[in-house]
Image (cartoon, rainbow, N blue to C red):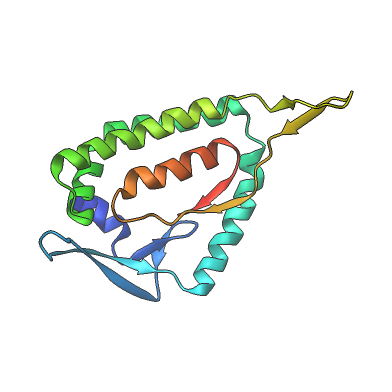
Length: 176
C-alpha cells in the first residue's frame, strides 16, 4: 500500500462515521528527525459526543453478532494487519521513533492480538462459580457498551490492540 495514498485518506481529517474534515488540526512529527509527517484532525467535544452516539448505536448491533462471526472478522483483521505489517512498522518507526527491529516486532504482535481475540470471541458464554451454599451460581459475560482506548507513545500499536481486540471480541464498541 502506498503511504502517500494512505496519508491522503486521513490527512487533516478525523474518523467519526467516515473520514471528514475537523475544526482544527495538529501535526504528526517524527521524534527522530523532527520532520512533519502529516496532520490529523483534532476532535472537539461535539465530535467526541457524536462518536459516542455512533459507537453506542453500532455496539447494540455488534453485540448481537454471533461469536463465530466475531471470530471470523477478528481473524480477517489479523490477516489484514499481517499483510500490511511493513506499512504499520514503517509508521511506527516514523511516528513513534521506533527502531526498525522494534517496529517490525510490534507490528507482528498487533496481528497476534487480533488472532488471540478471535479465540476469546469463542469462549463460553459464562461460567459456573463455586458456592458453599446448595445453589447454582453462574457468571454471565455481557458487553459493557462503548470502550475508550487512549494509546501510550512507547508501544502504541500493541498497547492499543491489546485493549481494542478483546473489547471487540466481547461485543463492545471502541473509540480510539
